[in-house]
Image (cartoon, rainbow over all chains, first blue to last red; front, side, top):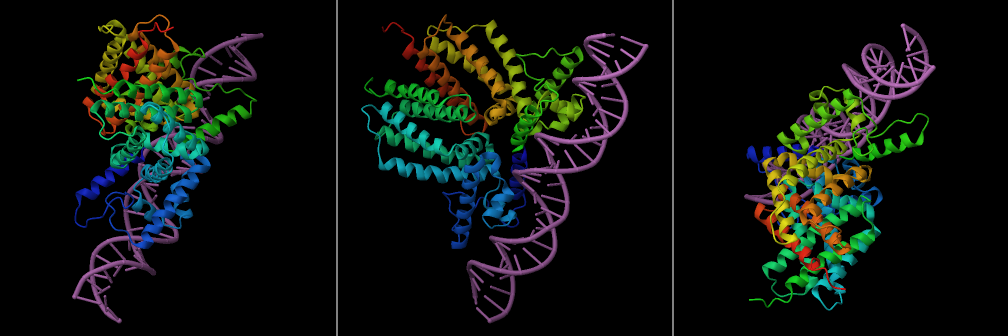
Length: 226
Length: 226
DNA sequence: CGGTAATCTAGAACAAGTTTCAGAGTTGAT
DNA sequence: ATCAACTCTGAAACTTGTTCTAGATTACCG
């Protein structure tokens, strides 16, 4: 539960004795340290195992030893690819989000206002999550539990989410106010998911919350106010 | 990290063999199983130790063995009062929230619109959290990481937060729409705190987010629309 | 091809949350 | 005051995330 602090400490160590540059975070997307084919395959196996275990029993069912075993990789190797369980699950989320974004792109939401389209898109995503509630649990919990050492990866997830919402709004260049609204929508989205996952809010309630927050967009949409 | 599942399982067991009713959750407020004076004192010591350790190093610094030692209580006893680290930290949050609510009540926010008053109140709370960022970290992380087994306690925290916001709005009987807005504000509040705590958003950014979401209130305030 | 640095494996070891247990201490009702 | 039930203590044990180590394997450079 507190292993994160140790992960952070370790990372600090690595930075400290820079004798041999150990490349951190093989698992992260953007920089892509050019993986071997076999490495890419390993990475894929790991993410696949992670998602499968998560689908079964959520956050707690993703046990590092089991992920390693399932993906036929030594425990140490797993940790080289993903420096902590949280990193692993956040990476899993990135992976799933990409799928999701692709899927959503195919059927753009039909709605007159940007608010409607965004609400519709989020509800579509929500229904997808409902099909794999355990997986959703694992990913969302990891995301909100992540500490500073996972910031880059979490940020990446956040950017991806923003992209999905902006896509739904179908805007060329959003105003700062609209970007603020998008931020708030993301906040609401995450937090509402959590309350649903922990059984404190119904699906209907989440729907209402999403629709409510999406009205914020209307507030900014008319645009011509200068 | 996954101990929560075991805690849940254990609780299930307790429910299962109901030969001797083991009273669960001494730590929870509302039901108040009538604690002895000494028990009340223990509970207080534990919460105090928890808060103190959290203030030092955040979530990870609150180690159950150390909390037990500091509060002069056996480990088993600590677990009898608070069935998991998460329970303990959520209870700590309840405790702090009570303080906070009391403090806020003394100086009601000055503002013309409900939106302003709420934003002002939340920023005041935010500044209080900034004074003890580690404590804030511990409490918020526990809150969002909590699973179903902690739902009642988390719900209690949520109700308390709602009360604070409604207080700031200064309404007699809010409409369903206003309640929705309050829910969304709470979502934003929590999620914004997380992004700040994990270093992904600045204080200024949090302020903007809060002010943005508070505009939702204006949307519903005029009220006379039937 | 040969050598060297990086990577991978198996497995032990460590840390902290959680559980368990036997015995000592309290409490409450009679 | 006394007995039964409950609670507390101290310590060991167990689980799972994380780290470490020594010895294979692999990738790559010449």
